Length: 331
Image: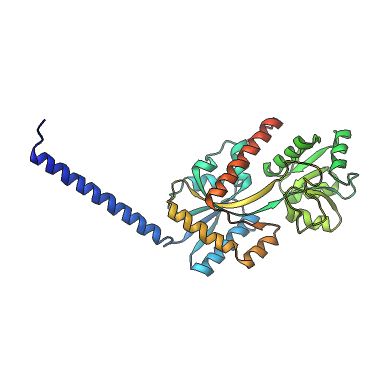
């Protein structure tokens, strides 16, 4: 086959133009990423102002402003335990200017038990974990159980009284995991908040709960609750006399809730890496670490890949708990 000079020339010109276009596009993209951020960043929180995740977001935003001059605007989109905000951010442009402050309840537990408009590991790029906190197993201070073994035995001897308070799946699943690990009995009684759960333990309406530190620690210190164990791998500085679940004889209960930053899937790696680095630097700040510690939260700052692996392992764990416990949740 003979190809004419004109045809060869036309193809050459077309190839040259395509190469130039691709080069220009790559250069423009690199320049845009290099300038990131050159406009305000929206940090979307799935809970109302004043809650833990909102406090985390505002703390990071303030430090990024002080350290780098970045403008970070907090946008609260409460609803469905944080899932409303996650669904919103998943649909936003992948340009680094809309960041989700996602809690483990919405990002590691929600997709396991609900029909969500996102998949945590494919709809998002995990940026970094802000921090995590272990939970406390508590009973009324007058409860006959003095330790975990006592409580397990009591639930088996009193199945009709063995109920537990819970305000969200983020607390229901750890209690169900506890039941699977120990054989303890317990029926869920739902409440609207951790504080409400605690009040019902104090009043005697519920027998036990596994709950986050802020509402529990003051009541334990005030003598109205008895903390039997903490779910983390180490004892909590807030209540150092309380043993870990492992120390109490319960294996496989190293559970912590966390909060982290996420970007929409497809966000360029240079933007992800830059945001991750700057936030990690913020989390290393002594003032920030101390403020998180005051909320019983340990500052983290995981690398994006490590955070993704952590989430993947948690999702698998909770899937096994739901399957083994034959748990059902309404959407």
